[in-house]
Image (cartoon, rainbow, N blue to C red; front, side, top):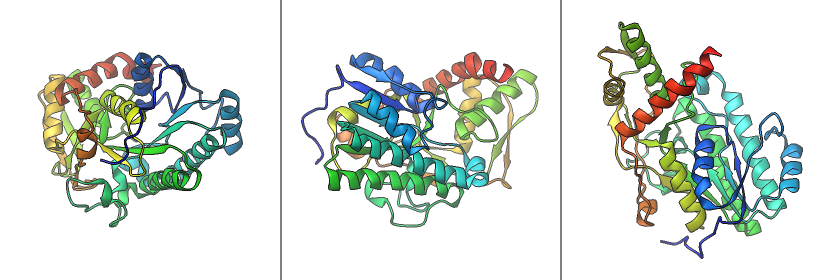
Length: 321
């Protein structure tokens, strides 16, 4: 396929992971330890990425050679529905500031992280890259999706007008260490892990699952995503965004049953149809990436065990602090 060029070597380079404390950013920091590069990070209380001057000043001082744009305001259905302005403004500002500052400072390579929610709600499944902008978005996360679409288009525009080697990757639904387990704003996997653990601890109760349990989802462990992003940074250089997924899917009911089994709890599932289902199906066509020679390594049950172990070791401790 088009998009290949001489590999972009990370060894010896200064690589900024924007959003290093998030689930994807922290996975990227872990993955980059084996690339013999200098990983740059900055806390949000030092540089507010929504402020153009702050971003431009910091980048002019640190001069990264490569940038992973993993910084974003993120959340599940409830968070998107109740904070639409935050999800649209924050993400537009963050991506625009980083991309423009990267042009100004001569960054050699930038990878922008999108989301599978950029695709139309009823896009043909599995969703290929060319499904973008062919139909209406899922209403429950349209604000976030619009911002992410703008980021993809910015990378394409800067490539065309300025010759910048800026690329975009679209991950499927993610889970793993550093996920958000707050039930008011979390995605489906951490929410179900937290609910199943609560039932196990109480030795009583039922696991309440939002919606009907019928929507189908594809899930990717965040460490597999980080490996794919490093692979793309090193090997891909094209205008078209690239899907990153596993090619496998399961229903929300099957996911809840799997999580209960992994955690070791026998509990009745109670579905709440008064809550939104979200998109009926979200499966990416990742053939472009897979044809380049990359493949995921972490199976679902092993990945869920890893996510649950992190929840027990870190998330619960943070909640108590």
